[in-house]
Length: 229
Image (tube, rainbow, N blue to C red; front, side, top):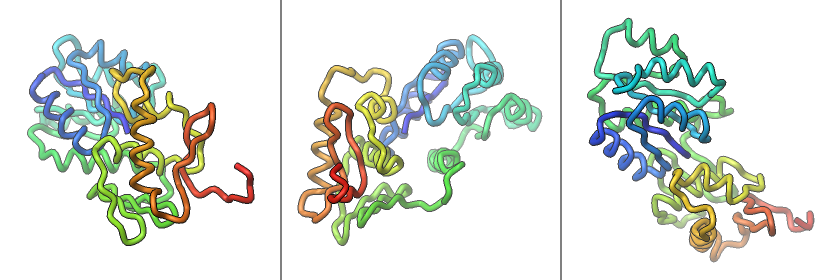
C-alpha cells in the first residue's frame, strides 16, 4: 500500500516516512503544497496524509483542489490547530479524517487501517488464502502451523497479493503499490522479492499460491490444475 505525506517540517515528514515504511507501506514525502498536490493527482496513492499549515499554500486548498481534480484518494489532515472550525473546514473541503498534533503514531496507524478498510465487505484484521493467514495488525504471516518471517518489503508485497487474489498483476502495477516513486522500473527487484516470498510461503507446501504468468506478471491464489491455467 502506498502513502503520500505532505508535511513541511522535514523532521516530522522523515519520522512519518520511516515509521510507515517499518509497517510495510511505500511512502513518498513532499514538503510543499504545490508539489504535494501534483503528486497526489498524478500518482496512485492509497492514502494521503496532509498537513494543514504548509509554507506555500493552505492544506485545505490542497485538499479542495485534489477533490476538484477528481482525486478520490482518502485524505487524513494533520494539524496543530484543534479548533472545531478548522476541522469543519478540512472535512468540508473533502478530507476523510482529522488528526491533531501531537499524536501517537499508533493512533495514526489505526486511522490509516480504518480508512483502508472502507468499502471492503469485511472489517476483519486478517487476510486469508487457503491455509495462509496475514494479520494486518501484528504484521505476522503464518501458513498452516508455521510462522512466516517477512521483511518489510516482503510483507507489503504479500499484502498486495492477498488483497488482489486471482488477479494477474503486472510488474508496473506492483511497483506502483509496493514501491515508492524512486523505484527503477528497469530493474529486476520485483522478481527478486517475488522469488524470496515464494520460497517462504510456497516451499514445502502442497499447493503453490504465487504463480508466474508469462509475459504478464504474477497471479496469487489457488489455481485449479484441471483449468489448464
